[in-house]
Image 1: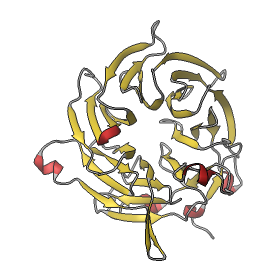
Image 2 (image 1 turned 90 degrees about the vertical axis):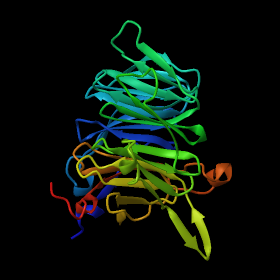
Image 3 (image 1 turned 60 degrees about the horizontal axis):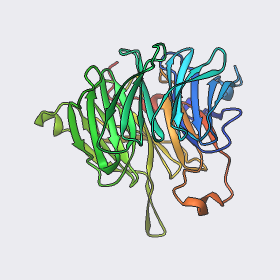
Length: 341
């Protein structure tokens, strides 16, 4: 009998081009948003297909005018999306309609929803963070300049982490967006490819295009900063040659605070950053992994496998499996060995 770890299945009606983001609902463990370079955002009701029980289905689809790079939920009935067409769209799942609430002057690269502010925070290559409240007569509430193009943002409680080009990081308290509370440089030498905040609010993990992850802490005191570290991953020696892949995505487990990493090598690993050990590497996928997300109860991991353009057009000409979103049931492998919960 296979363990729950081996239970995985592909969602029906996947996007027809590379997946930019998979994002679970913060309150419903079966609601999943998937944004894609095929210009769509899709909402899925995730079932238990591997066990032959309730089957997953696509609930609705929203179209953009260009590739969609970012999506998130605001509540059970609504979400947001943005991408290369520079618009920020408010998604209504009930009537499958979108409403443009504002725009940036360049691609929308990342977004998070703040429950405390009742606002979407969107980030762009135009170097701004913008706050939107879709219920307001003028949805755009404020705009905040940053020194570089913004690649990724993530939020825990009231702490917003902003990862930019030139390996810059700004940390904001969202209750005071006038200026960042901390300005940092990446601990990694290469371009930032992914970012995720610890759900206990202590810090964040970030990763680069050069197969490394750094674990960072918000507390600026020397004692806290001594705990930060970086490590190599998503690498392999093949016939004596070292191959190094980008780490495309990071996701913290909502209960155990362990985290998963996904790379262009097609692997997903689970790490316990407290003891600096890998807990599990799942079987390799046939394509690079572009995005991952745990659901809110920590029982499932969504994994997007697709071509990530690391090898340019030449790599796109290779015969490949089509893009897929896999749903993996996770078991005790995501739990720290010393868990006292």
